[in-house]
Each structure stands twice: as structure tokens, then as C-alpha cells.
Amino acid sequence: EFIHTFGDLHLYDNHVDQAKKQLAREPRALPVLHLNSEVTEIDQFGYEDVQVDGYDPHPAIPAPVAV
Image (tube, rainbow, N blue to C red):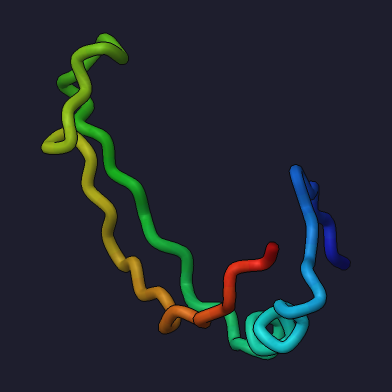
């Protein structure tokens, strides 16, 4: 079962090969986001209050700019 919501989805003719490469990749484990629980007001969060563990991205897939 595949359930997904797409927002501003578009695929240009010169990006089809890159899209196929993306779809052929094996998914990796999702990272975990940790927020400093001592911060209680959203406006008080700083970059030091956010930690991402286990982020293991695939290499970038270069694509030409579509015009």
C-alpha cells in the first residue's frame, strides 16, 4: 500500500532520468529528531536545541536547471 500526499508536484522532461534513479534507490532508515524539552516557547528555540540523529542521505542526483 502506498499512501502519499503531493504538494506542488511537477517533473520536467529533462529530469526523467534523475527521477527514475531516485525511485530505484533503496530507502534508508529515517532519522530521529530530538528537541530540547527544556524549551517551552517556540520563539525560544535555537539551532542548538535541535539534534538530528541517524541522518544518512543518499548522494545528490545532479540535474540541469529546467527553463
